[in-house]
Image (cartoon, rainbow, N blue to C red):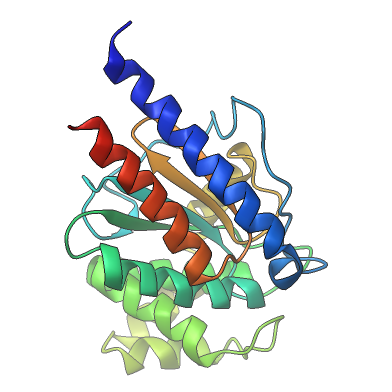
Length: 238
């Protein structure tokens, strides 16, 4: 059997072993009562219906990175706020040399957060004006300055846009007309098809393989998982 075919399986097994142990150690710290389902997926078909990566994705880092972490997130989820900071730490450490990239997808949970879908639409209105640069500035600002659990006044959304240099009039039109309503709805459909049951819902892609990173894991846990996978990838190239 071609040894190259064994590499993905060995990477996944090693990653799951270390991740499983670390997740159990930290379970009490990262398990909220409502927002996150951290049940570990053992199904080999996990996230098999996940939407393929495309040029329309919001990505930080190289699309050709060794590891791509796809995050499905809700801007009103307090645990998503924590994980947003964690992912910026990850990109700061691994993004510049092409080891890890981060893709952000929307997963507003209407049953919990009535305002989250409109906030997701707002970030897409920012994208429409200024591309991915504006999208990331806007979504970062949302997580940075707004309260969780429906505490944001929707009137602030255009102010945030103007604060990052966007045209406020056009932004309001985009938001009021619902230009990106379907785009956000499609992202939610994708999140559910990817076995998402809570937020943040995170999937690590290594080639064609998928590893779940359940819940708002701290930086140390995600780093350990990444280091394990990168070490296995390095071994496979020897």
